[in-house]
Image 1 (cartoon, rainbow, N blue to C red):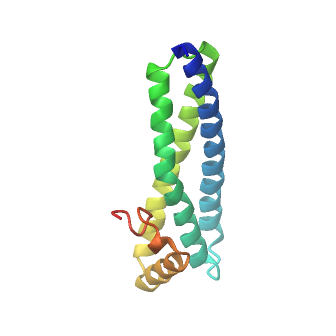
Image 2 (cartoon, rainbow, N blue to C red; image 1 turned 180 degrees about the horizontal axis):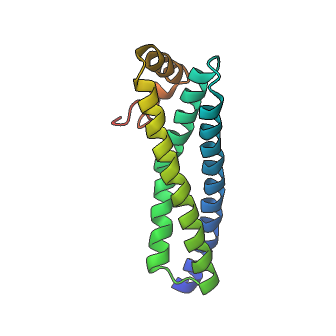
Length: 142
């Protein structure tokens, strides 16, 4: 198989994946902003835990897809329209990921201010099973 065909076959699925995750991250980012605006204390702990988990669980796999797309852009034999689409999708998902990481850090800072809040959120995350996941947010080093 020649490299033009290989690049063409790889570019379309990567662009689709990047577009899908840009949308998902955008929804998560909107939920974080809505959450901060609502300040509903009855749900705040659960929502913090859920938002942290969702963002942190997709971060590493998404960073791998972003690296693959960047390498394909740099080294792949793509048609011009595919190169343009992949470039746009990559910029879109990198922007959303940047904001997700920033919001995650803000959530962690907010949680760390109150020891009871911090313990409750940690307990909720452990109860969800994340402590058992090697490489997960609560066991990043295995």
